[in-house]
Each structure stands twice: as C-alpha cells, then as structure tokens.
Image (cartoon, rainbow, N blue to C red; front, side, top):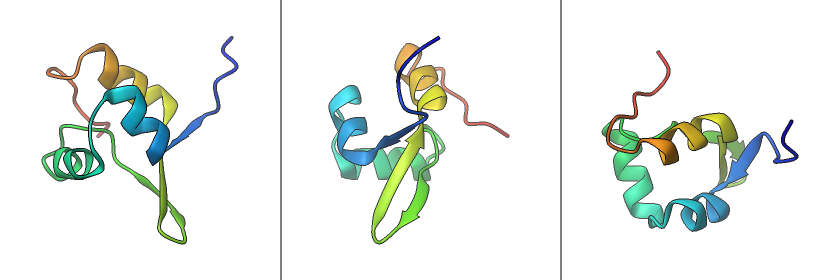
Length: 65
C-alpha cells in the first residue's frame, strides 16, 4: 500500500509530469490528461491513480468514461 495522498495538487502535478499549467489545461480540454477536480478558491487537484496512469502511458492515456 502506498503512502501517497489520493489527490495531487496542480503544483505537484506540474513537477511530476514536467508539463506547464497551460499545457496541462490544454491536454485536459483535448481529453489527453486526467480531469481536474475543483477544490474551490482557484485550487485544483488530480486523482493520484489517474495521474499515475497518465505518467505510465501519456500517449495511450484515455480518461475515465
């Protein structure tokens, strides 16, 4: 079992993926990146499991239906 938190904030997502915020939002719009979860107050996060799936296969990633 992992000790990673279930949600990853945008700042950590940019670090883990080496993508900029703008690129992440563009790929979300293109359905080529996990959808963001609105935390309110201009904060978003991503499900860790979906982000791990994207990291494992960025070109073949399909968002959950």
